[in-house]
Image (cartoon, rainbow, N blue to C red):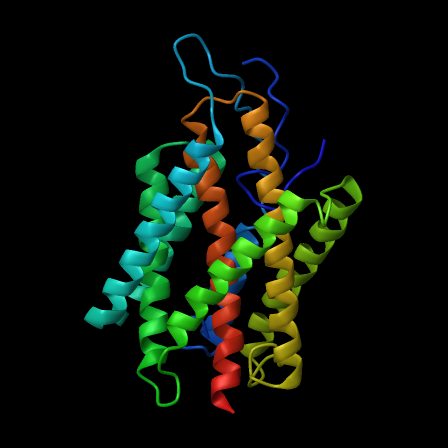
Length: 271
C-alpha cells in the first residue's frame, strides 16, 4: 500500500472493516516546524461508513477543503489589514498544538480543523502583513497566494492525468527528500544561534534560492500523495466525516507550500 508524506494521510489502511515571523533565524524555527509536522507518521483506521452513515464522496472532500482554505484566507487577510502582527507567534503556537492533537487523536472534529486553519491564517497573515509594510515588498502576499493556488491546481491536473504516477518507489523517494529537508532546516536553525545566517539556507544567497526551490518542489509533489490518499478513502467507502481530516491534511501541505513561496519571493524582492 502506498503511503503519504502528509500526517493526515500517511499509512492509511485500505478500509479494513470498521526568520518566519521576521524572516530571520526565527523563520528557520517556524518553517522547520511546519515541515516537521508534515513528515509525522499517523496511522488511522477510517474504516467504512456504518449503518446510517453516509459514505465519503469527492464532493465532501472538495467542500471541506474549500471551507478550511477559505477560513485561513479570511483570517490571514483580516490580520494583515488590521496590523495585529503580534498575534503571529501565539497563533502559530495554537496552530501547532491543535495540529498535533488532530494528528495523534486522529480526529475528524470540524472545530479542531477550522481552529487550525484560522490560527495558521492569522500567523501567515501577520507575516505577510509585515512583509507588505517593507518598501519594494508590496503585493508579495497576493503573489504568494496566487502561486500556492497555481501549484495546487497544477499538481491536481498532473495527478488526474497520470503524468506522474504515485508508486511505492515514488513515495520512498519523496519521503527521503522530505526527511532531508527537515534535517537541513533543523541544522540551519541550530547553527543560526552560533553563526550569523546559519548554514546560509535562509539568507538570500544562491544556496538559499536553491533550498527554497527544492522545498517548493518537495511540498508540491507531496500533494500528489495527498490526492492519492483522498481518492483511496473515497473508494474504500470511508464515512463522510473523514472529509474534515482529509481537508486538514491538505491544509498542512498548503501552509508549508505558502511559506516556501513567500521565502522565495522575499529573496527576489530584496534584489
